[in-house]
Image 1 (cartoon, rainbow, N blue to C red):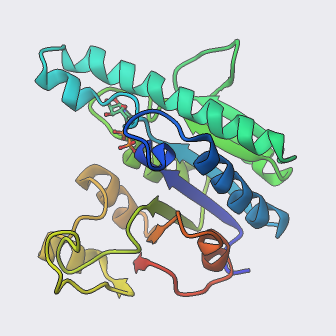
Image 2: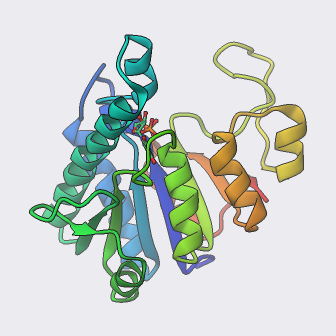
Length: 234
Ligand code: UDP
């Protein structure tokens, strides 16, 4: 196996499957199986889940809500997604712990870095909810931050596209996919990988990012084994 400890970022939208809103349980279960294979292979897996399928602070601000309030609502939405993923993982026999950056003691642990690392060492999957716990940030930033804190080897960004393209492949049919790209190239060419805060954190801490299609079953395992799936930024 190529990696010992992986931080997987799943967007809220990825949990929607083909739906327009909310959670597609079949999709969540598919992810749970993919995660289980990687954990069964002895790799430590931590996960950050987004909330865009339920609530986005920025969109709510546009319709008149105060940004900070809306962002806290977005963070709560991530916890709902985390609970769905936790439930699917536990249902197929994967031990998990959910840690939230906003305290919700009836349903999860508070985020405690050292405890999260101890859980990972004992083979449990740790799911991080409520993003960074701060408004004006994103769950991509939470993913980079937690990955650095827990000393993950890589951040995997599971999306609907199979990597980073020279242009938006949904708009420009001539766009081609990079197998590998440097942090500098991403900056210079304005490629869309993560928001700048998240991206800069990875760059400054030499944390590679892999963007890949999580919807293709088995992809997560291939990456864990070191196969060149998706695009690696390093
Ligand atoms: N959010 C926040 N701080 C964080 C992480 C998330 O305020 O550290 C809020 C923000 O409003 C965001 C929402 O939670 O729109 C959902 O997160 P995100 O948009 O990152 O989810 P994704 O796009 O990955 O589904």
